Image (cartoon, rainbow, N blue to C red; front, side, top):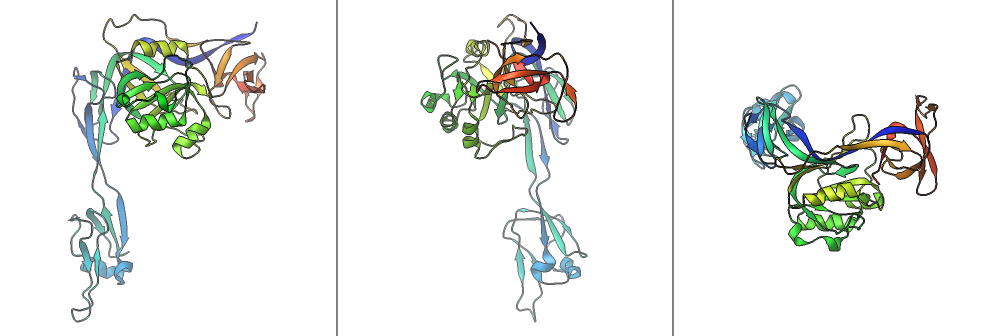
Length: 373
């Protein structure tokens, strides 16, 4: 029987994991090598320059640009409050003066007597970087960031939304094939990483967000539910920056799909433990997977072989991990031995996938991964 090897999602009960924590610009690193840190601890901080607000003062005061500098009430570098007068015309015989009040809080950065434009700079924006995982600082880059390392149980998902967060693992279902609904969400899940079984519904996400859960994990999700929750069609994008108040991760694919038993049982083993979660996903070049990271103590579990893939064989269940069929589940129908010419004109090894609808599609072998059965 024809077969080929394909990578899959990484699921392991023990591995060494390093999290690199970097500031966008130089700032202060608050830890040193050897320090023990917890997930929500701030390890580095800085300030980003505030927003820029251009004001065409010549037009606002109805004066020539060259007069603007002399009409400003404050010099460059002066901090102003919202509503505070910053410029004033002399008027006529001391009357009919025209004042301009600042519409923003900020600092007068530049005043141009050529364009008549004034630039206000908003307040500096604080930026804080947290450790993300509980562990030990193994490296420090002065003024830039650090590396935190820990022994962890590690699980990759297929798709996620929302960024980094952490909380206590708590189960909302009894089995891996149970649909997660709003009725499964309880008030004691505040601050928790809530684990479902099969499909995550739109109302369960909303209810979890309302009770204050930090993350929701399930096997599958309907793309329409995702659209309802986000309020827009996500399309092809890098996720992780959504500001919805909760991180959501799907471990298997789109649709009513049970969570793999291996994944479900691994999470169950660590119920009550702290987990770090990141829903950021990228499905094009430089693939980025959503992840669930559970720091573990020495001796908590024995090292086992990572589950990262297997052999493609006819009849095997798989998921497609690239557009235009991203997240769709099917089975291997055929494994042609000859390279196939793709729509782009390039050649690649392909396979024929039979979808649950009965339709068959041809996709590159690099665009699929096996599902644990």
